[in-house]
Length: 242
Image (tube, one colour):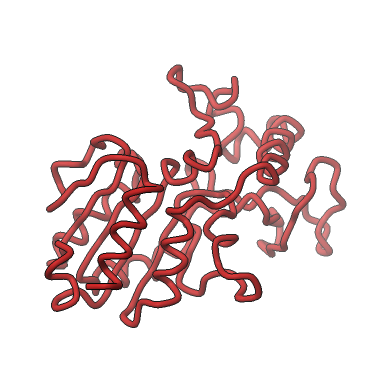
């Protein structure tokens, strides 16, 4: 693919998942038994769970937010930040991750990458359950003062049963892309798992970069398996130097 990229690729959509951040030391949280840090998904990642036991849910995400200070962007994050700066065509980086590693990979002083969206929300953001306002949040949400409207603040995370963010922008970008790249994702969670089909329907080339074959590997035109910290910089170098 690298040899033909410069001639035919103009518009790119990149999807990233837990695998890219795992190489920075961010736990995937869901273990082989299906539990998230010892909790059932139903107990910490649904609106019903928050209504039933808000303290448990807040503490679960407080711990995840606090853990971000111990991790740093890895070469894969840095390579995608470089691509965002230097790619002259259209680009959209869609992350399923709620950490801030893509944001922090941007050059100091440049702010968050303009062509990055968090489809599942962000740990370092708080959402008002009443008015829907969001605000940056670094500390604990347990015991936080209410929103100015009087509503309770909750993690700005898309829980199971809720609609992912930015879907109109994502769908439009996929419909117009020449290349769709999936990095570090299982290919098993919808709607993101359906992006490769949508890209293929739009006539785009498709590439998977993952530590090992995913549930949807057979849907991609090309698959490269190995550490994202090695494969993503190699791919970006070829793309920008092609």
